[in-house]
Image 1 (cartoon, rainbow, N blue to C red):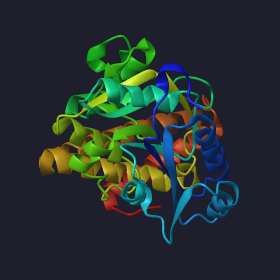
Image 2: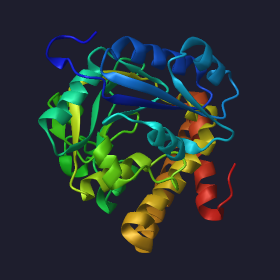
Image 3: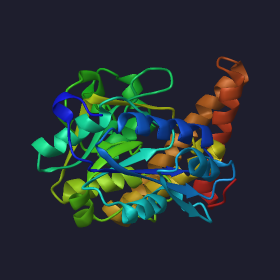
Length: 320
């Protein structure tokens, strides 16, 4: 049952993409069931060929959920598009399988679309597994803010907004704000905006599809709203942790695609050089830490391997 001023007709279609994240998915669906009240019209789970019993769990424990089972891992964008094709609500919630929806979250987010006709996409304040606020608001990438991020200038000059990279302080301020990018872990989207902008770009397998979608929303004149009154919890890595090194390569591949799509071949080349500098710099730092035992050995060894794998892929195109 909905409470007070947030009473509304069932209008949200919830779409959850999952890959081998059974425990997270169960908790996510339970939170949607508990908090959706009369505002959630339907819940759609798209399973990316999981082998951990996820689809069987959904069928057994959440009979009200529409389950779409893929015979292969379609990636985030393509799988979400399958869900979008089946959704009937005027509002669409795209939620990661490792997210817990908090009470009133759907209601507070949907209220934004009622008061702001130009709003096309909105997202809540998100807390991590440690209870700290996750950075879900960002800026569209430029050569300068990418350099600040990759070369760690935002850490060297933390009080200088000029060097802040992709980050914004909206999550810390706690006020509803218009932003350029919202993390794709939890979106509420206007169906009419999706009809105009189109679905997620399926060339992005897993990463940067959120930045690409936000840019397309803004280019089409739709506003993107960060709503800190609405909250959720995101554990992070529910699916990507199953293949962390492959995930790192997918990040590079997706970012190169984004830069070529929106900035041409010259933009792609600029990103390529910055990525080379990033991984070379961090490989050197991790190598130093590895030799001196100044940091956790396991984490240092993993990060060293990650940067080595990324550099190898950038130089040769060869994976793990």
